[in-house]
Image 1: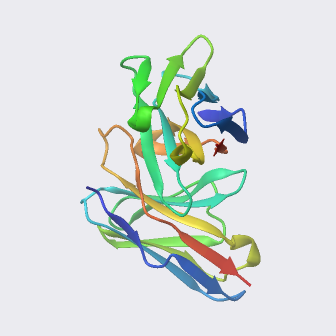
Image 2: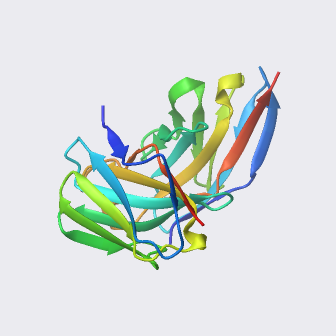
Length: 114
Length: 113
């Protein structure tokens, strides 16, 4: 079974802090994704990576950056947290090109910025 | 551009009655479509997927969905609801390269005794 783990289930940070959310997968998948989930909006893609050190912006990248130094690890960085970044953050992985498109999700990190 | 619209934000059914969660899609070519489920305090789990094979797709836990090109719909159904089906359900379409997913806004299903 694919296992996707996220470093924290709940996180509380102050406005202006730098925040790191970590995601680790154990299935050697090429693609990794970061989403945020808000009520009534579904999941929205922040950034994704299709290979080590490669990244692409998603639909809502503003205020975020990412890092992928190793294949199994994909980090989401909030350079200066703001209250409008309070949300549930979900990491996902999928095999490279040729797969069915199914993504495998971690349990999520609920971030509160005060 | 690909998109999906879930027509109901909340659906409430009695245990043992049928479930219908509605989804319409927009796509310039034959889409790949999914339904994911999210139970409270749990991660998203794939229910079923359509990838241009059979138009009636069977998933886990007795759910199924029918792809109707003429109606641009991919509605999720189950003949008899169970209390454990209470969750949020997302209709999803693949968009572009790298298998990016576009999610609908979600439908919260409540099942009452």
